View: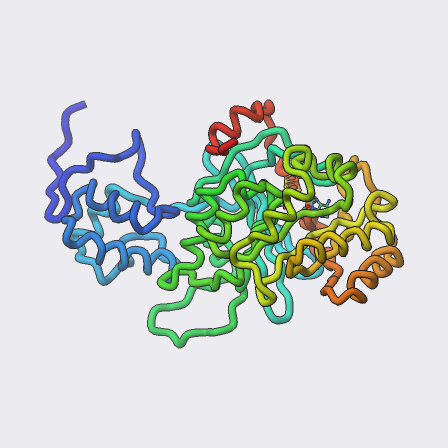
Length: 396
Ligand code: SAH
Ligand code: SF4
């Protein structure tokens, strides 16, 4: 093929950092990364900070996906951005709406993998439950995601892209110049979808920084909750580097039972975990740690369990709220949900001791969107734990 006519570039020099065969996705880059990538590709260094601010607002405040619409940038510059960059989020493969209004999305990410995202509307808020990994390396015995073989970490673009996708579907991007609407359909984010967020720490952090950025999606850090099964070494970093609220998948009150239900307990025992929670830098009465406790018939739901749970929380002086989750069944699950009477009796013991003990209402069960029911169909050979941890940069 003969060389095509040279491209005239008023603003940008020729790109030096283009990935092979494609454009650079600007979604998911931190401000610093976007700054560097613009300069590397020809934006004059003196202008870069301002350009990042402008592009950032277009992408995250207004939800714009094409450079041509970025009207406060010079036309020639817009055209050149278009040549080099893209603004891409995961593609929605399917969308199901439950009889209770819960929406479950299946989104496709690079490599053809799929993850699930759930939107839960409530009276005074709307919560988006997002995924941090395809599948999960951990194998909690009551969790459907834990049976999925294929695992890969999501990139920051794929994580924040789930939020952008939901705002698209809810038609919630503001129009420039329109009055600011304070009621948000998507007001909260929970990292409670597929995957263990603390085994993908850096990417989750970078994505949540974007979600919290005041010039973008602008969600308060108190409206973001990260749920972990108990990756102890990463817990303090969550407060320091993300600053969001924390939920712990506690689920058992003896090491013996927790070793089975949440096998990461074999590595970090209950006492080690509780000490890390007691030390959580941000914890206070207004920012209590949520203890998630799945109610499994005859396994962890006795009165003794409730008392042991209280003893732990008191001994370690952890400002806590206990969120009781009726077990959501999935095909082949080895457990049964505790009876309503049992769940209420358990909740009552905790409540009487002065702790909030809400019972989570299962949402979207008819579309298998409830907690722990997520599992995408794309499964391949299981990678070794070592391989995944090496990729995730998990320190031992
Ligand atoms: N990996 C993280 C976050 C995803 S799981 C974690 O484990 O915390 C989100 C919550 O759903 C966790 O508390 C998890 O224990 C709970 N869960 C998993 N499977 C469930 C099921 N079948 N029924 C009810 N809750 C479940
Ligand atoms: Fe992974 Fe959380 Fe499911 Fe355990 S409960 S297998 S950590 S997603």
